[in-house]
Amino acid sequence: MIRTEVLRTPDGEMSLHIAASSAPRGAVIVVQEGFGLTPHIDAAVERLAAAGWLAVAPALYYRFGSPVIGYDDVPGAQAGTASLVGEELDADIDAVTNWLVNQGFETSRRGIIGFCLGGSEAFHTATRGLVGAAVAFYGGGISADRFGQPGLLYQASGLVAPFLGLYGDQDPYISVEDIEALRAATDAIAAPTEIVRYPEASHGFASFDRESFNPDACEDAWGRCLQWLDTFLTK
Image (cartoon, rainbow, N blue to C red; front, top):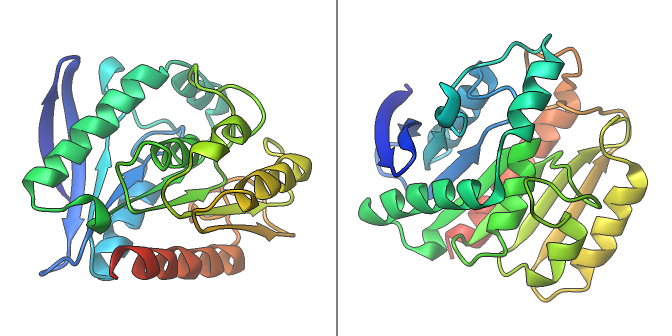
């Protein structure tokens, strides 16, 4: 079951959607997609809790009312994503991290996963020393700047946490060439990394209520995600 808690920040009150197992072995930050804290994001929080974690999803659109945008409103989601600023995102993730510290979760027991824009932020967070593992579902901004931050290719040398990237070859927003460039960039660093491509999957393949939902790719990706967290957060 999802519960909601309010986290006060210098820019206002940010809602957190939280679920946890009875005795969580670690904590995972779940970073939203461009449509906000959708039922898909809540389902991800619940899935992680069922797997033994405390999962928390911050409402990153809180500065303009925390809207949940319909999947048929792509321009609205693009406008929401465009409104995000890297320094503010960092501050928000810092606030959630501090909240988890107060819950007793040290760095080695904290992970982060994200979808779409959240995947980009999960990758970026993995360069900041805040988490012990990171997973991105179709995180964009690979070769182009996003949120005022350099593309992921140009951040890759700074990765300090193990990173798993999950991508679809049919994604109209993320090219296979960019995915392979990210693979080359992450293969060159010391931290464990893995890039997985799904030939028949498109953007949003892990979201059960999108037309692009691909159940086979979703289940494989979630299996890999949970294994990644188990491997690097429970040593």
